[in-house]
Image (tube, rainbow over all chains, first blue to last red):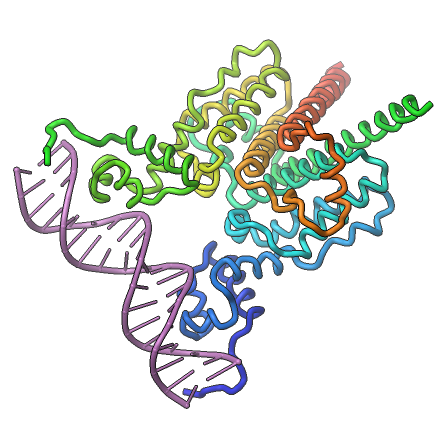
Length: 210
Length: 210
DNA sequence: ACCTGAACACCGTTCAAGT
DNA sequence: ACCTGAACACCGTTCAAGT
């Protein structure tokens, strides 16, 4: 049995393996992780402060490099790109979503993404209230859509009883991608609503100032 | 030590106590639950098939009596009431949300609520595709908003670094209820979008038929 | 029928011991 | 510095035993 002078483990390797495990099996435990790494469970604790720390590392891998939202042509484009990137990151690893959602974010890179979006909206002329509400809406949208990808509501599992929902499902176009369409439609509605509000605020601001 | 001939436990009592435990402490384990009921852990298994079954019972308590959506004046009213009821049920027990979300729904009463909504939309003249997408959007909205209530994104915890997000938060009106506003605004956008689509489908249908 | 204690197979974390 | 085995305090579930 070789005793390497080079360390076998690293935070990077541990988190990558954990993500891989979740992608394959939908879950991960430290014993499984250790087994997969060919190492004892306690070894892991030399590179990582515990399970929560691994999940945080996985979040960094999943959310990946920040969306470059600042260089968008206009704010609407930035909003759409931000939301698609956010949801797309989750969509690539649906099995990891539950673990990520039940734990508080501490990744600075991700907070920075929210900041970048806020900055775009600020520059576009949105009022502070509108910015806060808009980002909440977009956040909710992406998380709701991500959860739908992770574990679609049973409602969508067609069963045998007759019902309006079943009728709608069976009669829906065969090419309807329910999850993508709901996400894109809702995103479009939000953008339209924001544009409307911006125009309204601008005219109200002009009226108040003039 | 009295040995009652009347059973001490019941599924009802177990689930109620579990919900109460979650409301107070944010979690529940079988040992805690047994302790709170003044009973041994194994006793619980005489009334309930396991932990998942308890969570399902809690879901029934949280979602409570179905929203009477069928007797609404119009479809828009029904949609708004459905969504508010759904989110309101979660909002009353935010600590229970994580447990409910990570487990598949098997409560027939809740599936019936989705059905009722589908029926309202069907009668209003929405196409099957539109119904499926609309219910997905509303489901995502309520779950996203519920998660926001359960564990607001850290983004909203104002920290000390300067950022556009922090500026928006500190400059936002003091009476802004971020979570309620985002939910209501988004709901209004969805209803408006649906109304728009209904009008569009109707005119297209007329044109095609005539 | 209902409650119990003991046992089982897990889990995350710690820590003294090895090299 | 890094890896290990053993121990700890938990968890959900089962089951033979009591009344």
